[in-house]
Length: 168
Image (cartoon, rainbow, N blue to C red; front, side, top):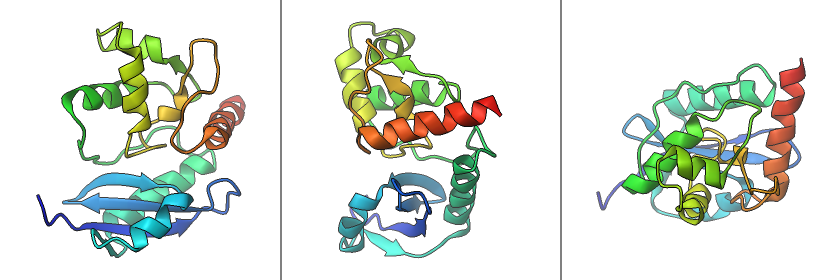
């Protein structure tokens, strides 16, 4: 609704690339994950109440475990906030295994819309829950690190983190 005030809380990751992360929830569902460069804007917005809820704390705990190689899957209630098409893409992303990658084209085929790979790329970029819904695992057809709203460096960092922990 119009007066949707989300609760948000910020955590220091101790990771050079990620620095601070914000996690938001509404109605007991996680709605957003914010990277450090978005936080100023969130803090100045009147759409958020800065408060640590039990759910946000649990989401951070799972994220922390992920960063430390102790967790490969997230078990959290996520809000569905996109269009039907976006939700379909995000559901497909959620099924890409830890440490693996898929191309935009493969996702398009998976959602039975093989020509929609550009639209898949757009949906990927609009993912409000990066890391939790692993858009970093989607790459260009020539294995290029294309398009990631967190920046290519974060995408590569997350993929390398997963590759390293897979070996252990």
